[in-house]
Image (tube, rainbow, N blue to C red; front, side):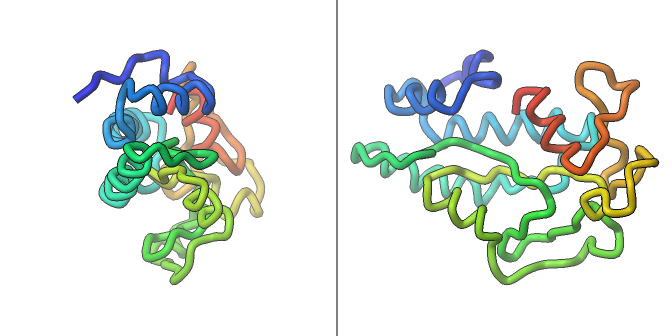
Length: 173
């Protein structure tokens, strides 16, 4: 298994795509490493709502087959996390709020469908302030996963509706 270089975590999509095309690592290797990183770092900052490792690795295997046959789409093999506001078929979509912790939709959100068709690999759902901040942003604890913590300074709240997404970006996953 290829070692994923540290610079990948802060690389652009086009830089990662070039490495996948050059077969510096496979989509499965990148997806496993991305899931490992998200599962290791995410809980430390209350940023991970749900890991989707198994389905991500299945998708990455299909993507590697496409790459093997030199078939590339816009986001072939690019791992990503989606805000827990977006429905993923058969998975909880909590909207960051306890009353919706068991909510499961039968269909994917349209943006999830489009990203899937573009070849991107969903590795997890990211935390958010409950109900996208519809009740306001007065309390750091207003999230099912707990207060989103800034990965550069854990004494500060990342705040906002997309706190998990912001944390993920700042932490390089």
